[in-house]
Length: 171
Image (tube, rainbow, N blue to C red; front, side, top):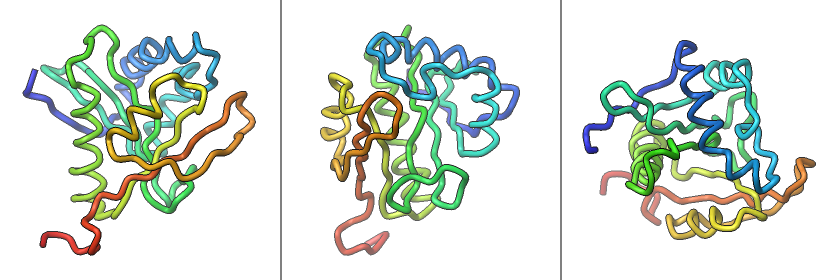
């Protein structure tokens, strides 16, 4: 499993992404955490594709993972004025094979740092989730603030610096 392709999703991908996302977010629903992706419908997935940078990671044309970037200038900017990772899902049938890690690394490095030239990226997750926060911290994300967004859980917002401390790229 090393010949992954990454691309922007198009409207025709919505049914497959809905299926992948609902299967991936089943444990989230069971925890009672109200992420939009956990209970999405086809119209919401199509809106996500239309309004944000929704990426698909594929192998031989089969979607393995999806991840969306919300832009600071878009309809739902993140809290820190940098691209914000949202709706990250990995096909749960694949087990622990590093698919999610590869998708996150590609997004952070290839898209956010190298293509968009953003010095950082953000994301949020539920404080009540038993392991996601720790995973993001291990990946270099720093918790910045907590907020109750009125969805039945507290969201912790994280930020990851992607450029060297000097702020200079390519040196």
